[in-house]
Length: 166
Image (tube, rainbow, N blue to C red; front, side):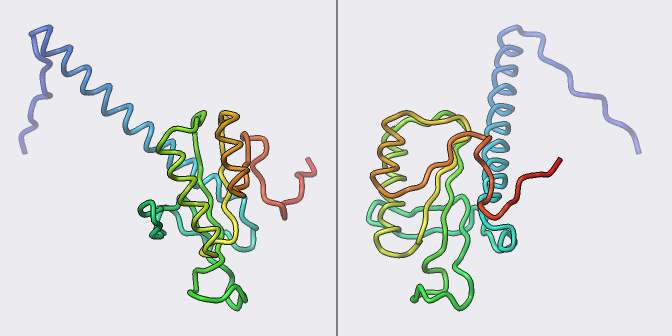
C-alpha cells in the first residue's frame, strides 16, 4: 500500500496565520474540556469512599423553573433511604469549577437552579468545589442559598478519609 506524503503547510503567510489561529483555538477548546472533566472526576473524592462507585458523572439532569440543571456529579441517596419519593430524591450534587469564579449571570442562574433543587428536596446537599477560589459575592450567594463550598485544592477530601500516616 503506497504511503501518502504528509500534508504541506500553505506558502501564503495569511493562510498560514489563519491555520495557526484555528489550531490554537482547537487546542484551547480540548484543554478546557479536558480540565473541566478532570475537575469533575477529582471532585468525587468529596463523597464517602464506600459510595464513590455510585457517582453519576455529567449524566443527571433535573428540570427547574430556570431551565434544566445538569449536575457535574450526582450521588443518589442510598437504597432504603427514607428521604422518600423518586429513587434519586435526596441525593447529593457536586459542581466543580476549575477557574476562579465570579457571580456572572450564568453562574447566578446555576445557583438559582441548585437552590430550587434543595428547596424541593430533590437533593439534600449541594457542594461547589472552587479549585482556584471565587469572588466574595459568589461565596455570599452560595452561602445564602445553603450551598456548601470547598475552596481550593487543599480542602478537597472526604469526611470519612483518614489523614495519610506517611
